[in-house]
Image (cartoon, rainbow, N blue to C red):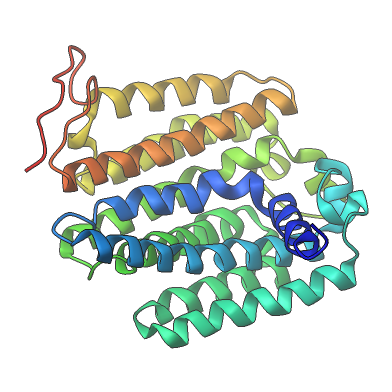
Length: 302
């Protein structure tokens, strides 16, 4: 047990830093990768997916460490259970892990150069978020960084399994723009901490009510239009339409931070649903209730 204690501790620390972001990184990346798997032999699918996980793990860990090392004051207010403000890890200990995570991330891309562009894109995105004033502004933080970060995530998730295709590239660009337009939802729950560290998020610039109106009646319709233009809405028009309507309703209900957090989590579930629709198309499957109100059932696998 003593031999494995350091490994167990590091896994616990990794989870402490990263678990909140799995529904926007490791899980959706894995879901999207499924669409690239048809036609590959089982051994190749297993090998390629394990390689993808080896890339996604430092992808999220490098970001979480960067974000939480530079955002300790905010976390003491918004998320005091995180490893640094809770005292589980010191800042110097987090920095050492940051060096390892970044080195591993770069090393993987050098081993597999096809992911080099996505790796560089993510490193620059994280630097933009954590080291520049523009990364604390609502436009830079979400419209720019969340778009580029999502592109890196999804593009690499597909390419780790199989070469990119014109259709996969279209889906990647569409979903990335969708995410960049409406990830402002996350800032509705973090107003107190963001104000304390001087961020200029949408709620702090336009007010809570004003930001909800902007997201619901401007950014959310624009995001749905992007999905339409990216040929994604046709995959599940009823389900995607209804989930966006429910999301709009929740955004307009000015609840407390806990309610807004649940709304953000609902947004991440829609993110995963969209990617599941693209993967189901790749597998030549139709899921009950996804295509029309009456449902179709399984079409089968070619």
